[in-house]
Length: 182
Length: 114
Image 1: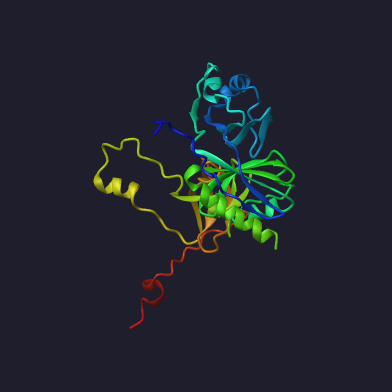
Image 2: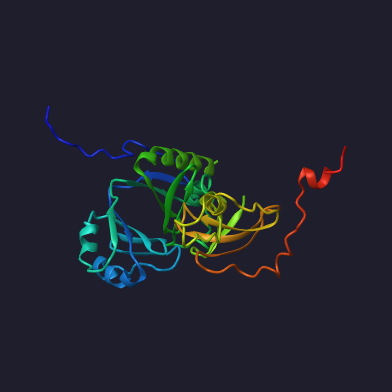
């Protein structure tokens, strides 16, 4: 038998949802947990190729790379093309902390006319378009776990959760999606 | 469900995202090595537990992760104000009446009962 490490998708084989809210596992992406003071934001923005947002609940996106505001000095960076974000951040010669969390997180994509309803079945966060428009993001709770919700479109959400909690998150969202379709 | 205003996220969020952090504005003695055990116990363990207005630390642990301070009524659970850590206590005399002095202990209410 060949001695080879195979990548195992945390949500491989999971499927669920309903006609009004599709729940699918997101593909692999590289992710970075970035922390830096206000004086380092412009240099890091230049190194990463997008403007790090400094307002609560906002994000910046360009070419499949997203920077999500999580706290006053904290961001979650996601690159769907698998770029080495830590190496990019290291090019900025300013004080910052960057931890690669590509394999710590995974994501569930929820989309459809009642995607917000499916998520709201387990999360207290207000997802109405007036306060959570396209591009908004927030760290919050989903059932008993912590997630980052990112609105990528009018009817599309990306729910980032920790890998070991992924089956729990997927199950809750799939059930919420089924209830939303009743 | 309580809604708590986070001064860093600048909006009200569900209480599920927060964790309580004890009394606010507890100043650590600068001469901590010199004080007696009794004085240390006073600083470290003893809290007022008032009925009415209390200033507390809260942490938005499942949100922005920040500690902040909030003024809450221990009877009604109403939050009067929340403000960033390090800021002074806000003046709440306009929105909250003076704290009731009476403490309804058994001794106070039934002290003369035979």
